[in-house]
Length: 192
Length: 217
Image (cartoon, rainbow over all chains, first blue to last red; front, side, top):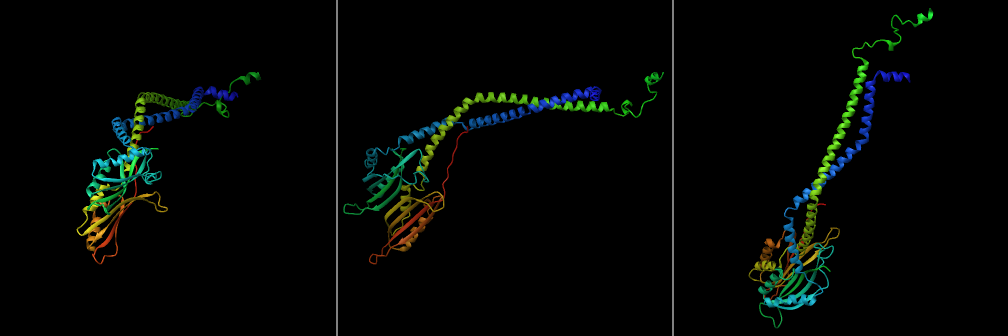
């Protein structure tokens, strides 16, 4: 023991150095987790700032775009059919007779939905639904074309022709050059 | 007398006891040990100070970042709300586009078919229909469209000309669809020389694509 004490007394600087070294190593070891933790926190905040900056960059003119899109959506919603309003819906189609020189002999609202627009279909609708109608029309080629054009122009309702069959009108009362057309229309409607 | 002799120091060093010998190395052991100890201590102090300095810098940087986030958070929340609204409205518009997705506008299709009708050929019926085509083990159903034109023709070369015109028409071969034009004839009326015919244009969709956009949270 005395020999050890003698040695310690012989090298006081080295002893103090070793003690400081041990203290520093201990403190460094105990606080090593802190730097790691702060680095992780800094990385997370940097990522958050990057996201915020990215969002700010992507949001340039977003307000105007949203306003424009909202106007479109309002315009869409105004033209949606309500499948329960059968008489109003049917009358909508007959009203084409006033504007065009055609005769609409029947309008039938179908219970079955268009399979392409149903769940699992290639054009599946989630926010809206679709109502199908079978319509029989007669008139000249130009008049039927005008009717198809009116349907396409989407005044009053958003609809398209899913199927049609145009025949040369036959029968006793048929005018020469007159055509009869059977149309299957699909109209965009409110979600049930 | 003898005890006095024992107390007297050696008149020369005892070379067997090395600790009593003077340190005669060029660089003394004390110096090397002290230097090493001080050097190691300095290294340890340096490492500790460096680590503390790094922690200090990180704390400052984190405080700045937190302040920056606090300042821009309100704007970011507003942007995210706007983005959510945009996404919702865009979905409605996308759905509308899906609703109208078709290779033809029917009145244009009728005009196109009629424009290719040659002299000596009469249409009696034009049918356009859409259906779902699903092949076993080939994934999702695809849209298929059929245009069926029935009529009468006097000379079959006119029918061939009509079929060729339909095949060559770019409007009847929309992008993303496989198109097949086929014709069928019935028995020729021996009295009038007229042959009833049917031309079928079949289109099957190759694929469909969707896109999404919006902000991150």
